[in-house]
Length: 268
Image 1: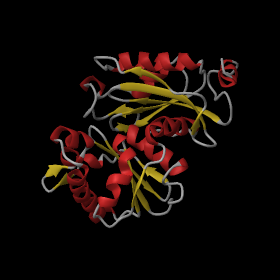
Image 2: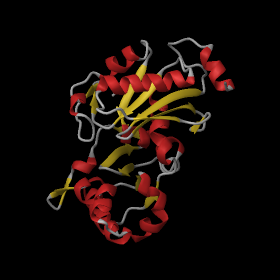
Image 3: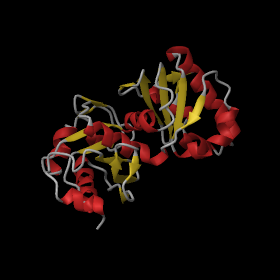
């Protein structure tokens, strides 16, 4: 057992085990991942733990999986969690890429009760990534004006940050561009399904980004998702005007953002 776990086990259930440690869980379509986070640096304390997302991915089944991850670490403090949908007033308002049974679920009650009554904060997964990138990643040196983080995966997730403050639940992937939802023409899944080269796919991404520029006039785009690992191959091919940089925290961003959210008592 690590020193971090020993500290956790000795703590009170209602407060963070240490002033500089937090805990986040990122709920995705294929996996539920969690880790202890050093809130001073955004780095994981030890390895993350991943469990395959249950099938069907009902709220109760996923909450049970979250409990398994918390118990794996012996964590007894507050827990931040991300979900792939719009969260407003603690209620899941959309379920575009998750089981339909999530719609209308009281997320705070669900997770708090299943996790032994501890304090939780539940937010959209892209919003969590945006918080983390703004604090510790690609947005850390670009906190002024409008910054837009986009995650390219099954769909296109988004986080809008203005002067360092998150504007939650933007869902830019559902905006229509040339009569078609952006994520239906420029997500990483569309590229994979159609067998497009990076060059061909990047033309679609450029069209989407140019549309977002016309509406929001951002100072920076941060692009995340698995395909951002190849950012050096396709970001230079983009033709929109606003600077574009690859996300730095990659797959850890959701966990880090969730840990920040619950540590700071953010509610959505």
